[in-house]
Amino acid sequence: MKRNIAYSIFLGGLIFIAMAFQVPESLQSEKKFIVVLDAGHGGHDSGNRGNGYKEKEIALKVVLTVGAALEKDPRFKVVYTRKTDKFIELHERGKIANKANADLFVSVHCNSHRSQAYGTETFVLGLHANDENFNVAKNENSVILLEENYEANYDGFDPNSPESIIGLTLMQEEYLDQSLTLASFVQNRFKKYLDRKSRGVKQAGFVVLHQTYMPSVLIELGFLTNNNEGKFLNSKKGQEQMAKSITTSIIDYKESLDAIYYVPKPETPEIVNTSAKMEGDKVYEDITFKVQIAAGSADIPLEPFNFNGLDQLSKVRSGELYKYYFGSTANYTLIQELKEIAVGKGFDSSFVVAFRNNEVIPLTEALKANTSSN
Image (cartoon, rainbow, N blue to C red; front, side):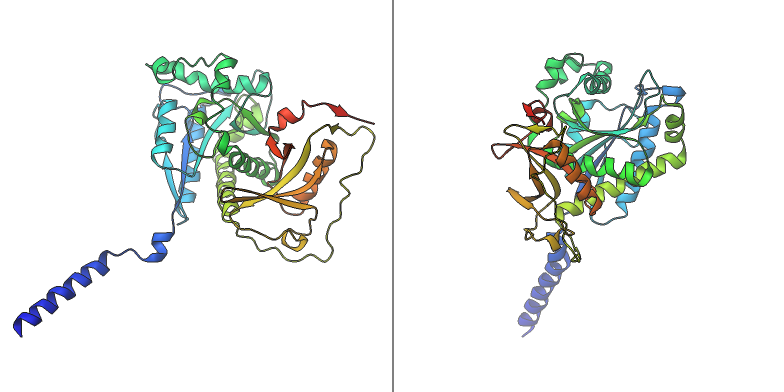
């Protein structure tokens, strides 16, 4: 009898211990969205010193503010490449993100120019479309020259060589769509809610983006060399506003992946004639343009009431992700108008995508194709 009681107590104890250490099913299935925040420069690398301001300090303050806000949201886990005034080599920043198995990498910087240029721009990794983009990338990549063993760390990479940039683009190619989506969120929010001049979403060869294996963007908050913009970015108010905008963009991006939408049915669907051609329109041969309005894991029926009244919809499945498009035309002038319609319907992150033979191609490549005009 005593033996049975002892055995029951022992068995009960094992069950209690197992239950105590068992992770609830809801927590097991809920994976935090990991965001790596990278404050550019640091330590003996001050970044640009436009108007006497320090890029490294402004970038760090903005990143810490973004991180503090995201850390309050239980859906997110934040990892920093630096939280103090410390020099971190570019290849180490990428390693931090990869080791964390991050879902997103966001690098924050400030721009400079010999003129009073101003405005925000967000970059994804890609071939520089022009000398201006290359020069921005070259300035940021030159940081590697401050590293002791940069030749070994970057396998002969030359930040001053356009040919070296080409080799950077391949590893990030599969994440380009997601990177472009986040970049569009960031730029649209800067423009719409902060009334900052948007210089657009651009592609250029940044070493720090090349090192990462996840969707990645590099944000240029503005130009410290511009008298007004530099003063704004160096102020607490300016840093808090920029940080809040970036935070909201990251949250919007995550929710777009989750495809958590509720769209009320409009009274009258929008009807747009995508075959119209006006004088001066640019119509490209063998190219089809569409406006990407959403992306997510949910398979949403292509009905106007699901997309704020937009019609002429299409979708493409890429792995576990569905991409939703509005319009289809070879007319680049018209697709820009359709993009504005989509934005007006609430799809603030909309951007133009180019197709050739039903395959997505870089927009810069599409715009180099032959055109026909009236």
